[in-house]
Image (tube, rainbow, N blue to C red; front, side, top):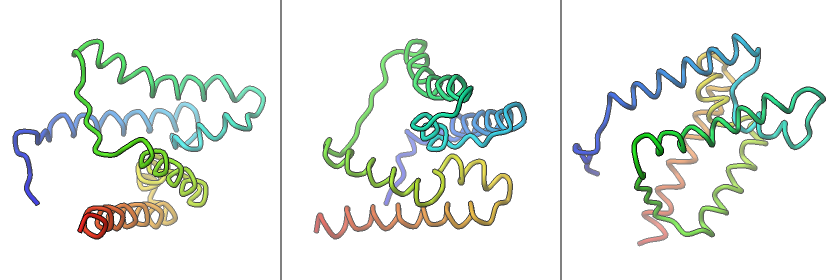
Length: 144
């Protein structure tokens, strides 16, 4: 494995991490809720009264932010080394995993770990281990 040092961007990555940390801290302090994307989106599937507007605003912000960034910086080059079927199956499996795991990487990995939640630690370690195993199997066993 080699690192493409020309594409290594520690300062923008650090800035993004700090912004995510500030955003989730503000969200829990001002809204009293965990910023777990799967929970926010899942709440739209069976909404409670008065619980729709903030969820739509949250999801709208997730969609609008990269569009705004692109409008300010120019076209982005996105390269995905997978076909539509692979992405669809992967997305479906991630969706199932977030339901069984009672949350996603943003809820457990960002918010839960910050709250020192043992359940979130186990969930995040599981997410990471399964991700590593999946990459190993797909890249080394299927392409052998």
